[in-house]
Length: 279
Image: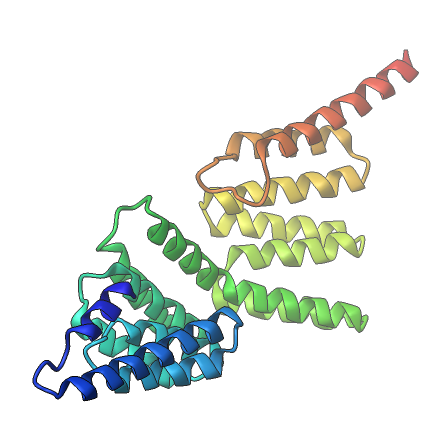
């Protein structure tokens, strides 16, 4: 932003000195007020003032980014897009604008548009840069959004004690999205109701539908929890050992290897206590 303030001081040199001075002072005053409004998180006022500053000094194209941010936070997504586009027209090599456009479309629930801008960003930055990590995280959230919607709907049905409807809904969504994780949710639903045979069937279905390391790991862990709930310690141990075999730091983010080892050690301790009682 300092760059554009500097440019403002040297613009329009053909105008009378008094007029230049007045315009520059108005620009600086407006910009300072916009910055203050932004710090106070008064997004609509900040947006209005940044737009006014641009009108006073059109060469300060960097302020289109600020105006876009404030309009986005105000909920005016069309206005934000217009200013981001104006900034992009002058700064095609700035990767931040691609990230911000991705966030804008993400906020609008336009998943196709968000993916497009995030992917354009990833072509411009190093894979482990802050912006790349931000984009990857956002893309991952987009991929999991349908699953989150299913989870929220099922939670609402369960709160209303509409258990059969919850199971029917999960079956329908699993087939609709071809999403193995929903089969795990369905299996967990039956497990928590004490319907273990149905639960086992859907854990099996999940394993048949995917080779994803993360999903295969989750299936083994949840099946282990079911066997532990049934007090079948050796089958539970086998499931947890299988989960450990399937574990990969690259894919599993919901659980640490320490958690897996804790389950294995807990089962081993219970088996040891049982053997001591026998002998």
